[in-house]
Image 1: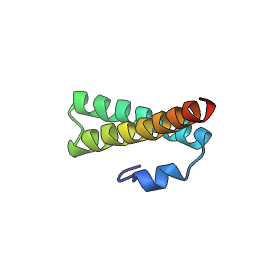
Image 2 (image 1 turned 135 degrees about the vertical axis):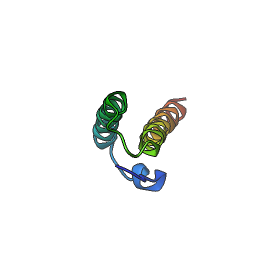
Image 3 (image 1 turned 90 degrees about the horizontal axis):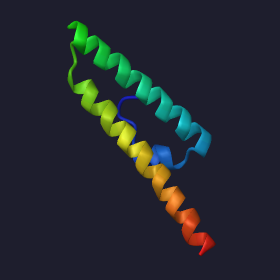
Length: 72
């Protein structure tokens, strides 16, 4: 999941994006859990996963807006 680029995401279908988003949220939960227990060694991974989630949501929103524009 680390280092997922926007170009890679734009080629994915809606279902694949939903799956990636779910996986990213699960990974974020696990990382937060590890941090709370003091087991997390790479704290930068939290930031990376949050950015990945933001990228996925951005691509999904862009598609939603494009679909609304086509209707109008």
